[in-house]
Length: 434
Image (cartoon, rainbow, N blue to C red; front, side, top):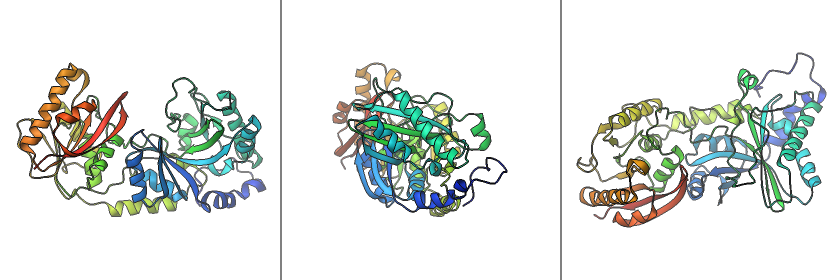
């Protein structure tokens, strides 16, 4: 395996370090691991559906994500292909904890040299909920001390605390504990070309777990959306809505309120079978266990599976010229230039494209609409327009108030509720009566 970082020094490596590759093979690549795909609350069934399609073993949706098992190439593939997940974690330990010594014993048993590169920048995020563990800062210190001791015993440079602090104090109003704030790499890590690593310690009641973040930046950051519109829809939510609607690219798609184009672009990626992680970096590439040939093989497979163009037309429309310019710029960065029909048009007067197909709508909301009454009026107008001009079409909508669903007049309705921009929104699929 090609090492992903230079030796610490030019002196002969100690005998412990000489056995590192055998440790990596035995403890990282030989066994299957417990893995966890983090998903926004409400999107767990969509994420589980994706993992099952990827061939993940024992994929099971739980609050906050999906548990599954696999070897390290399964973690690579999940990061490469998942559209609705936030990140993918490797479970290092999951154990019952009664006393402080239980934690120390389990942390010391982790083969840190297999997962943390020499001199790696590390952030430790601690989350405690009703746990009999205490003192988040001390927990983070013990994790760092244990990792440093393991690496120094092998003659390797110990990991160091990433800039920005060693732990997150999440005792008051804690967010989802499996969604870490990713540490920004310091200058030394940037020079070495290695992203900072995030270790998660989670204590709930009498159980605790240690995990390592394999993704780095949140997976919704595909890299194409550098020109956001007002209140843009996050990429994982857009993809989840399309998956909920069973969109595969084999029928026409229209986004009549496209804004910066997130829904249309995610549809284009799905239609062309383009892996969303092809153009970005991941934290697992800095692990000592990283295998470049395996990662390269998965990437080549993904590139070979991609179609040259969407099988059916994708239409992105809006009445705002600046929004359409942002949509064009984002589509170009996503590799979809010329493959999405982008035009200025009013949904309430423009003719539908040839169909039937799928209409996906993320309507404007908040201060752009004024009062709640005005927003409800818009929902009613959308429903009327759909029934008038789009009979037989399927529909996917983002609803910012669930009661608006009754105004749409759709049949075969299904919904998921997920967080977005500090709100709870409903992702809805339905059909316009023929």
